Length: 302
Image 1 (tube, rainbow, N blue to C red):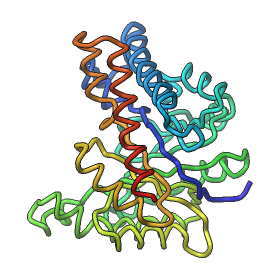
Image 2 (image 1 turned 90 degrees about the horizontal axis):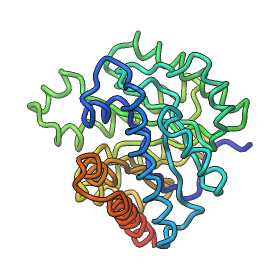
Image 3 (image 1 turned 135 degrees about the vertical axis):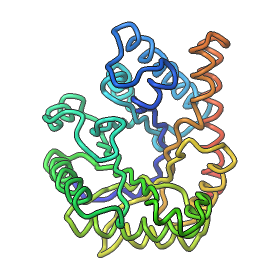
């Protein structure tokens, strides 16, 4: 299988675990009960119902994909695969500052679920300390090699949280860090990851506001003839910020799409959980929110 990914890829990610279990159920530092797990799985199934509805509404199936976890979404992954929908699954343990595997035998889980794309989420700042970064890279090299061996695409979600020193350098202004400091750090991080031998097919990256920063990220992703694509993640931002990022990305060759989750599903999911709207209404809101972003992408792409 040829390395890289160059087709448009418009992902609805709802592989969230620890963060939303805490928000919805107040669960922290323990596993959910059987009842809580069933309720959370049902909420994820509602999101998937919205995704399926969006395809009926005209979202191009060949560009669309779902990213959901095995723990609460195994039924979804199985059903999507049976319907010819592209599936992605995460391998990382949820809620960790340092990347580690959800399952030590991650390879057997990948083979059993058989997704098209395997995802890792990694917090990596080149200035954050060599030892934890090297530990992460050693683990990531294993999953990169595994994906090559069993013919899966690797999606690398890279987050670059600011160090205290970097934030202090911009007077603790997070927006200024995002605009002026983070893009350069992302390029450096990608370079270190590639040089270690980890080979993502798809980079899932935080949005940037300047075309030249997008172009620098694409240049790095494609260093030495690589064919890796970039998709822009939503980071739970407000819809206006996400739309800005997508408009920038859609104009840059090599940025192939997006993966926007909470911006699409959080409000309807929360309202359904609180019993304030019906399941059908929640799913239709998810469908509409997702289709709005897909339509924006396709429009800006032209």
